[in-house]
Length: 179
Image (tube, rainbow, N blue to C red):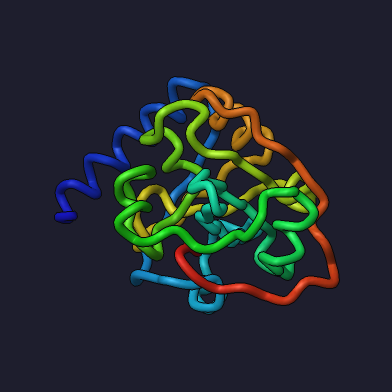
């Protein structure tokens, strides 16, 4: 994607947030590809970071997991708890095809690019307890802060009813196609 494409995608997103009456703030920064890098930015936005994992199960059904940045994620445990068989990270090409973003820029905002009901959306219940949440605005060289309520309004406007779930505290950390 060119910088112009990223600028246009972000403008469409922010216009949508404005249209929904969702308050937001954004900040530019150096590109980041993982939660650990984002923590070191010292952003002025405040808020809580999230790791966003774009997953698929054996039947090639997609899941976007939006977890608190400190929530350990064990894909085997989640697959068992959710009864979906094996979970794995979706390939970068699939990420681009389904969500319209690249690796390192995974975000719940990308659901505006996905056909409704093609992705299962699971949000870590811990995130609902913060005043502001931090997500990439379809690019990994910026961060946008919105409220948890604003996130839910946005997801519903995209045709998704997110599952807000408590995620296990005993799981191992996972990495992969996401931030």
